[in-house]
Length: 304
Image (tube, rainbow, N blue to C red):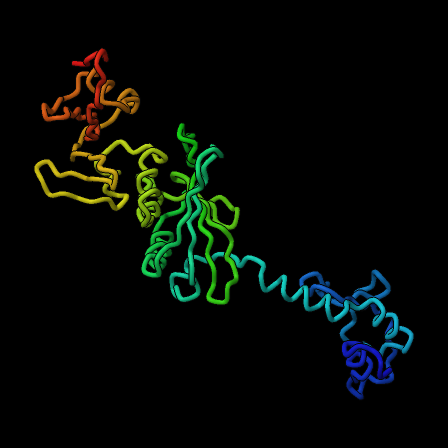
């Protein structure tokens, strides 16, 4: 038996208490594999219940050889261990908030249904990680489905990919409007103003992502611009300015669906909104966004 695998040798040399040594045991099925699939108790003769008064006996040499023949190889065991080590860990937000050192990196992937657009992705700074976890933990879960509105821009949410210090991934977190999915299980949180979602976009540091965000998220108001972490200018009224120069004036107007259709200087002017007679002229749309009059070629129809 010296050539048998270690698991078989251990089983062969296992001794039972002396008090039970003479009590024979019926045939016992031996299970090898994932411990999570083992039965709650030994199975006797395929059906009988285990009897605690009757201990297990040693396996015969033939049984040990059969066990060794069917046992996984060392390579298979190593591959299984490597797979389990890399498998995504379940996300326990409260646990991670209590010890945010368990998260070493968070990557943000923007989900865009229009595949002709360039992908958007960035990595949160180490200082942003504990803030993200705290914001997730602070959101209150609600029962029942929270409605979401399909985006005309093709935007379909953000997916967060988290890694532990050892490089093991946690299950993904997907956020779109008020709906949050953790490990693929929908959880609906009270995030009516999309504060969490907007904050995540505000963590983008590159110019392209910050500019594209305005159109992807369909930003219409000063407040939304501010939640994205853009530059605030303390004038009267205050201004929020994104990196490409698009400006929102502070306003308390409540937008209608008709107001949201305004996306150019000409449409803003045709809707009868206030005009700033600067050069070039600017029109103030509901919500505070300033639309700048574009250069006009000779013969173009002059609006206003």
